[in-house]
Length: 154
Image 1 (cartoon, helix red, strand yellow):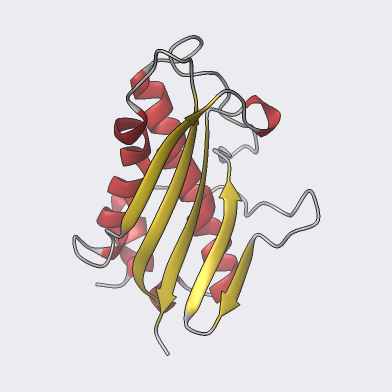
Image 2 (cartoon, rainbow, N blue to C red):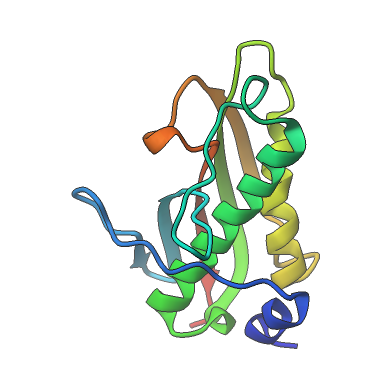
């Protein structure tokens, strides 16, 4: 089954693909890899999921923000590539969670994005390498920012 079809069957709606708000590209293809810039949790209405994990939002809300960042990244990939079916596999995700010093569940939060990618691209191709770190602030007050590297079919 195609990734585009799987995404539709899962019932997820992609938010609008974000435009660059600085001097960078949302995605860039180099060889057979597509690199994405950091993606924020943009909702379908264009609003952002904001708040600091451990203070303003709980672990579950932060997990949902990570999933939404993943959906935003998929929107950029579909816009850049024309179809998610051009993606052979997830190579790497790098997730940052805005959190308090005491919050230590960054990996569980970034699972929101990782589990989405696994569901869309399959248990093997959808799971790559990953880092999950905590930071004290992210752009526009968002809860999560995630970037990725994807291998493309040639």
